[in-house]
Amino acid sequence: MRYGLTVPLAGVPLHAQREYFTELEDLGYTDLWTAESDGTDGFTPLVLAAAWTKHARLGCAIFPAYTRGPALMAMSVASLCQAAPGRCVIGIGSSSNVIVENWNGIPFEKPYQRNRDLVRFLKRALDGEKISEDFESFSVKNFRLRVEVPEKPKILIAALREGMLKLAGRESDGTILNWLSADDVKRVTPIVKKYGEDREVVARIFVCPSSDTDQVRGMGRFAANAYLNVPVYAAYHEWLGREADLSETWEKWKAGDRKGAAAAIPDHVVDDLIVHGSPDECREKIQRYVDAGVDTPVLALMPMGMDPVEAARLLAPR
Image (cartoon, rainbow, N blue to C red; front, side):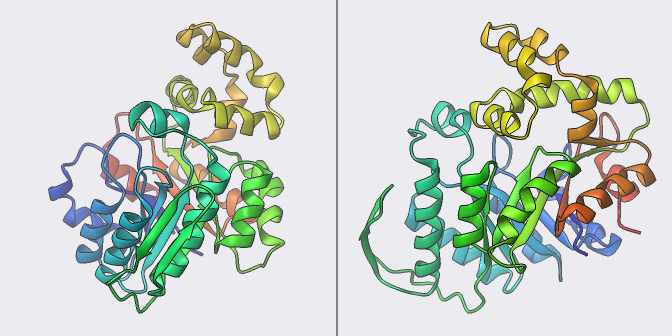
């Protein structure tokens, strides 16, 4: 079983995390994964982890398919693979209109085609092929990667609903899941695995090792509110069957009532989407994701005032 953690750890300067990265590997975390939204970029912590760890597998959930051009993405991936040969997993996803369009000024158009085209391009580029082609979502003229990649990384497509899940199964080595319950995994995983049992399913799981249920739910509503009202995630949870649970939240958000939208998220939805409780209870809940079909759980810590290093220690695999 793989067991991952999201890095860098919050509240610690990036240059000061070497001893923590080393400790995480010693604690039994097999994977260190980054994310890319409004904090550190996805590559820099992984490059540091490549130098600071010996065996940990390194991945990102996710690199947005829009925010780097195809050639730059290929160069960045190849450079990471040379820094940590045989240890890299590349997560590609459409991200959201908020990150792509509102923050980066890039039109959020044709997400399905953009993911598909970028994955196809990366596979060919990492093989050293010279590429001149008009893909449906971008064009590339006369590009050849000048960096050798002897050990190709796994490429996974982040997916929410059925169309992208099928794309992940057909075109990539697996999928990355986000903001879903262990029971949701039972619905999602078979869509990917029907294209091959070797398709890897990675799930980013939000974890708060605290038994203060009321405080966790309050914090959880705030965190979930920022995601569940993004159009792609609202459509996702409607597809998963949460329309009745979240309709009031969506209505209040559209009306501009952000606090009311958060307050309207039911307790059981927070409990479904955020693992919390004692460290042992958290491990049991994480195991439910594995039992439902997740190959690699990647913990995203919500320490809620707790030292994130201590939280990582408490949640380490046993």
